[in-house]
Image (cartoon, rainbow over all chains, first blue to last red; front, side, top):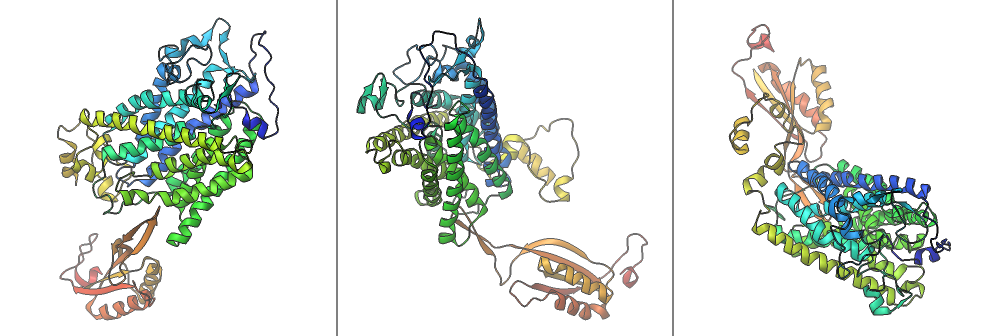
Length: 484
Length: 112
């Protein structure tokens, strides 16, 4: 994912075998391919993990809807990624065709991806140009799982209250207009990458077609977390507060689910970060370790803030700290030392623990703190990489250029995602509408949108009833009344 | 006959049950309840947001007894349920018109 970026290799004192001018046909690197098959599967697991993480935090009457938003995003984005998503983000990577103003590539260039099997079998790709060739199919698969989780992350901002059909429509439009272009800009050689037409080359100059100062976003601080966080903020504004927000208790209904979810996210995140090296090598190993320690430090950081401020270190705090640390280290994991990662993580945990209170102060209902965790830790991780990168970071005597560049790519991603998401959300508000009715919201969205309940609450009364073979013609509200 | 109802702390239940058995009470019914008295509830903090939980979990215990035993049984429950700390609960008794054992149809004191 670090297209054209070489800094982490130098940082870690490892040499990269540069490909001589390719005279022979490329040969598949089977170790890297096996690694990417596993890494992609691990990233996939993050979305069901997120469903548990978010699901446990909602009230018991809306846990299924919360989890369905993740599974729905998984199903929808999985399909459209193959149809036009990959083409828009990375379609021009292999054959060097030009993109559209550095913003996105032709959506129909590789539409459906049948072009990925050529006369010699599945096409190989070496996105970083370092001589490690993997089948393009698994590169697509890896990138697909990123698009899925980014869309799913947003759902936490609008828990308990939106029509499932509007959410699904939003996901399709959002990944097309916001995610695929941003992924192209940062990773596909577009405006925010280190290419000679990118922002950095314009600001700080370029040498031999590569920017002198390379933007650092190893695994998706901008594309995934700032993007999802800013989108969540925009949606929270447009969709509005839940009934009773700030007045009635909206406690997490199942903290063990939250902790299982955080554990699955942590596990999958190793595929996310280390897999972004696209090779089973020394950098991937360093990334693994940096991801590990930053996450540990962030959990500690969050708990320390809680202990001092609220008196108790909580399980929700530990789970949230884990996620904040994972978010923060995501852009930085290839550029930092392990000790730098601990510092980055510690600050991330503390910052996010403080930031989750902002929604009450400013009165927006970002229900599960997508802003407080993903946007804040994503901003910090992206900017912190400029401070703590061992080769070019400000704290390592690398001057301020890297930090300035990091701030710029962070803010541009933030602004771009917020404005575009706001526009999409307003469009959907005027057409499909976002909110379920007030009665449905009070009764619980699981009943209203999915005609299911997650648990038998109420013992005998809830488990009694009879099987009907035909669906009642009355609206669900009346049917419920009859059962009660 | 009397119906004695006690609202007690859940973790005092075993002690109360054993004391009642030792006294010779043949049966009882319990249900999970939530409530508050002078104790009020407690507060919980989630991501820095504090919630006051008023209703705390309690056990509601019901025993049917003959009139002559009612004050003794009440005393047995009182002794076993008491911790001296706030939130120990309440006990009350009310008169009962009729009791029927469903299996045999026995009525009154015979049904106890």
